[in-house]
Length: 106
Image 1 (cartoon, rainbow, N blue to C red):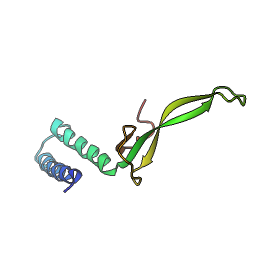
Image 2 (cartoon, helix red, strand yellow; image 1 turned 180 degrees about the horizontal axis):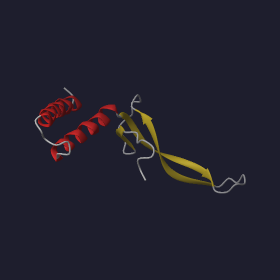
Image 3 (cartoon, rainbow, N blue to C red; image 1 turned 60 degrees about the horizontal axis):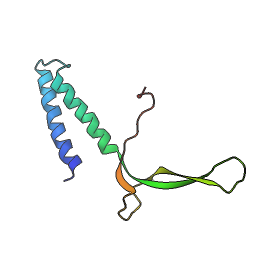
């Protein structure tokens, strides 16, 4: 059983308890109920997240607009989906990508 499956089982049980408590008169703004609903939303985000690899790559750019031979090197990050297999490297890190809805961050 994966960690997501274990967490989903616990959160679902807690949601059932909240539903019973609300049916018996507990207010909707009860702190514990709100925390459990937040846990449910966060777990749903984690379940729907995509695995990615973040690779540090070297970017070469011209120093000026003319066609000079001088180049500037800098570091940037590139994100690749988890369908790639990589050898362990200090510049490659595996993680998850959770898209952020536009308009939520101000």
